Length: 345
Ligand code: SF4
Image (cartoon, rainbow, N blue to C red; front, side, top):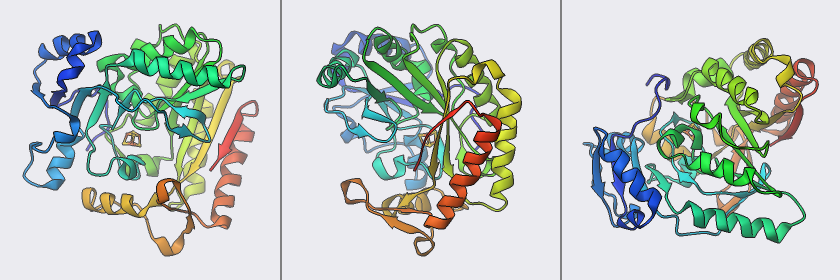
């Protein structure tokens, strides 16, 4: 599968009938009806069982290009440490095919995309969380359950969220993406309250594991555009992965970033560093859906860490993690001395 130069277009769209009770649901129905894409009705996303495809492998691929327009029923937001206080649910699922993706754990057998039309209810809930924490700032992460930028050209939910937080005193929005389709977000009234982060990695990781996403060069060009539009900018280097010649691979990445990002855009730059991890359920999904993947997931070579919902994860051994951290932090300190490293995990 090649990279995503064109914005995502679903092959199949489902509507939950209640979505049409909301103005946004109606608007999306009218807009999608004009496209050459099949539209079906479903009482609930849980009822979707008859996706086209002869076997699980094909059905998985169909699911990743299926969009369900529905209502977000659970309005209790998850926490989202370390990058924010809360995860704001604007969409779920992603059309990308990153082998290591965390959605392999959280979505498992339901990898289709969902977008929610009850955004006013979601924003009202965010407002409550902000009031509870006032006068502290409350940060909301919009990419915990999807690559929200990658589908936003279809719905503009993210743009609404950016403008909602732009008008608040105590709310901050953040999200990360591997897509470059940002043009409709450039004129959003963000008021500097949204941090736009791009996920970047070594050429080896992008080439082997990040299928169906935008090429690095496009991500960097988009990063420059959003920073020029006044958004605070960040990069997430994730997953940091120990491949052959990884020191060189990451050095090359930072050399490219340093060469491309204009100096005047680096005063308020952040980096977040996340080492590769996997869970046992994710490993099973990955081996089934990407049987030829080169992704190394050998439990014996890793360190086990207890995780949320009783699902433990396998990370690198301490000495490997320290080397990764020190090496990459050193590149950042040398090439972007003003940038802030928010965390390594
Ligand atoms: Fe997962 Fe992000 Fe890749 Fe989408 S772009 S498949 S959310 S890692």
